[in-house]
Length: 68
Image (cartoon, rainbow, N blue to C red; front, side):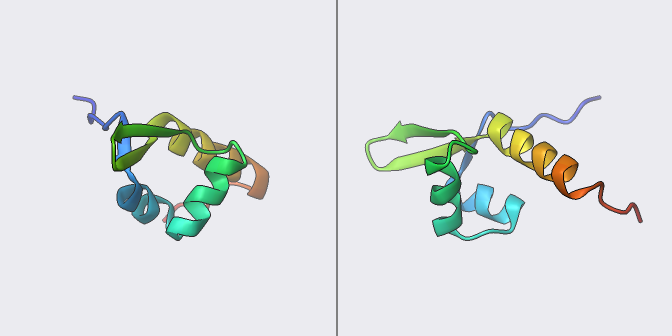
């Protein structure tokens, strides 16, 4: 059975998945590398598709990670 992933990550969850700061998340949003969506008047999220795309692009750019 496939693992279900959320469609949108809250900012703090995206930070944890990518291992980067909140400031860097917003820099990547401003650069068009991550997609920000409003979840409510005071909350935002990052689409899981843009997180995956960012990871895939980074992996291809910097080479594949070594497998354990």
